[in-house]
Amino acid sequence: MSTVEIKNLRKSFGKLEVLKGIDFTVEAGQVVCVIGPSGSGKSTLLRCVNLLERPTSGRVVLDGTEITDPDVDIDAVRRRLGMVFQQFNLFPHLTVLRNVTIAQERVLRRGRAEAERIARENLERVGLGEKADAFPAQLSGGQQQRVAIARALAMNPSLMLFDEPTSALDPELVGDVLGVMRELAGDGMTMMVVTHEMNFAREVADRVVFMDQGVIVEDGPPDQVIAAPRHARTREFLSRVLHPEG
Amino acid sequence: MTAPGTALAPHRGLSPRERRRIGRGAQYALLVAVVVALACFADWGAIRQSFLNAQVVSDGLPRLFAVALKNTVIFTASGYVVGFALGMLLALMRQSSVAPYRWIAATYIEIFRGVPALVIFLMIGSLPLAFPGFQIPGGVYGQAALGLGLVSAAYMAETFRAGLQAVPKGQMEAARSLGMSHGRAMLSIVVPQAVRVVIPPLTNELVLLFKDSSLVLFLGVTAAQVELAKFGNDQASTFANPTPILASGLTYLLITIPLGYVARRLESRQGGGQ
Image (cartoon, rainbow over all chains, first blue to last red; front, side, top):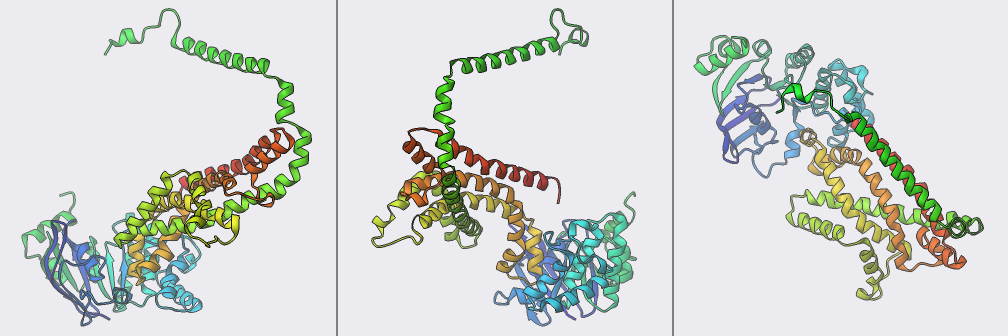
């Protein structure tokens, strides 16, 4: 299990400043949901944690190591972090099983037999043990996303990052993916989840962070941030998300 | 805009449909007239004697396949292997973060796409003048593989580059987020997908290379190293009859038409999903 500390993080794309000084921490075993309108910088924040985006300034400290230090081995850092993408990003030319084994073999240097055993365990865990020999294109979006979760879990990460994992799914497929994430949280995994699923945030998150225009507006337990927001911007966002038809 | 009433009123005289039919009929008539004229003016006896001489063909046929076609296939295949490897290398260099690699690759591609393949072959023939004592291993076969490889690499590099760009950015990100290095992610995830995308255009490149292999003629080859085009030409001189040239042309088609068909099939299958 991991802790993340983010200190005065800034990120600009050209002249556009997307993150304007973010401070926040994730404690070991916590589930933190990051919510906010699109363009608020929440995905960029998540992507800065595993350095898919290089912060312009500020620090990200993972388990006491400053990973924003240019001399840190990025690949070694990423081995401890699992990432789940909005668009799944399964490898379409490989079977489901191979999707889950390839990084185990190439990165962790596990043998073929061990990697396959671990892959099958994790596919069982997400309820897709029988799909090992299928190709990604033969699966529904929800199934693909669960394979993506298994692929990340097979690397034994100590922190899982979820970037809008259900936003690209048909509504009836969202539940299965959230179910897997709920179990994962129950097992004590440290998780950082960018999401629009307010019910999930309310029930599973230890903390909810509301971001808008590159800053953290509100940070606290879900009972407070979702049920009784203090800031007008949070209230306005939540009313639009929870009652989209006004 | 004209008033709807006048636009839709029946035409006087010929209707558009009738006019189209007459136009089509005229074109058929013209075509038939040209074919008939050609058939009347051609000297069929001379044509049969010159281009369809069965005796000449049957004398040359065994060597046409056993030597000339075999060599053409060897030249093409070896050139293709060199071009494939070098082309992939150039495509990766064009995407490199090391700027001089990008410049070298871009310059190479410009030069070798801009110069006729024939000139490249003439240059290869004169390489020993620039490097005294230097010999390309494999003799003519080595020179042919090099020449065809150098030329096709430039074209294949552009094809590979398109293929690499067609692989979504998320694939690299997913691989990197699993802890793979950039090089490992390229090798295991991006390149295999890029190659799949470019199989149809690469098959077309094989067809082009098969035809370009006729340029080996300019390297100076022995009777055992002869390929289809030179074989046809030599036989034509020997028998003082151009039939072997026609035969070698038909032998090219024997390979290029099926290959082109395969390329089109692969292309349409790819367009159809997956």
